[in-house]
Figure (cartoon, rainbow, N blue to C red):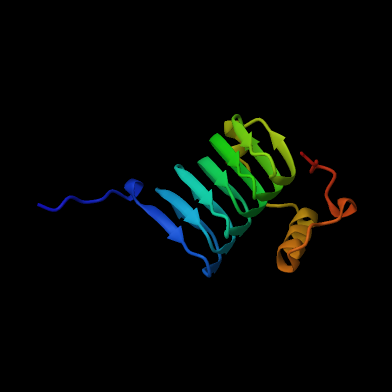
Length: 153
């Protein structure tokens, strides 16, 4: 008798070289090594691997950033930012780990259920700066950042 895998037991994997413009919604874990421009949403875990790049919002229970993310992240349980990660945007979480060496230009705010219900789209100013940065693979100048974003070292 064959056993059926439930969607919650599968990992959706987007490999290096994969490019997507659009939103991803899943019931399972997600790992991204390619490039995504859009919102990523799951009630499980999202891992942005070292070769992964995301321009957009991420919403999950547990988020691990090892690559490049520009946008808002909402981690209801835990957010981990690895030593080689580049994170620019806003983080909402109650539990954060930032490894020594991580590059961040981000604000961090306590997680609340209200945050999940709000529209987490980037403001037009921050969104255009982050999109320009991703396209050109350069760090934005301090004067280009929205005052709502603070540097964290």
